[in-house]
Length: 114
Image (cartoon, rainbow, N blue to C red; front, top):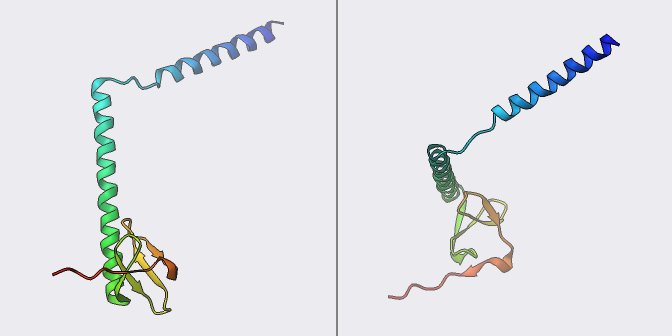
């Protein structure tokens, strides 16, 4: 009987210790903590946009060197249409990804007015 009582008491103490340690790890939001969170999110957004622009410029540069630009045609977003060696048409989006085009998606580029 004493052994069961001791095991029950130890179990109760163990669960009590776990709940106290969990409560101690909760993060309280202060003004400084909130400002740091906003700054961290802003830096993350800025880094993401810089990375997307870098990828876009790199892929467009590679496309201009390796593939042909289709003169007089444009993609749905108004950018250049490229043709690779397999005669597949694509454009580069703002994140630097190649978006493959169907013939119905390719539009004529309007003539510049002088």
